[in-house]
Length: 70
Image (cartoon, rainbow, N blue to C red):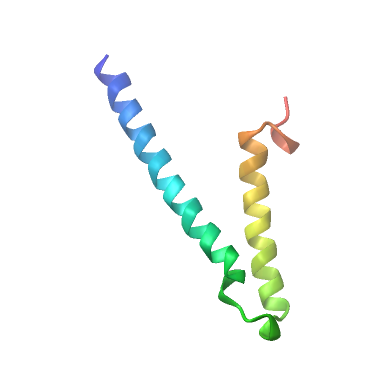
């Protein structure tokens, strides 16, 4: 029983940390990645594409889509 309690505590800690990171990223994206629209260049496009790729991978895993589809 102790092992399950320890696992549950770590799980809940991870969820809380992930939620905080999502909130932080949400603010970052709402601010257009802190980039002035007049200053956007292909480097910024690459950065945005990188974030999008990682987020798609995570949502695919969470919702069993793409390579994680059953």
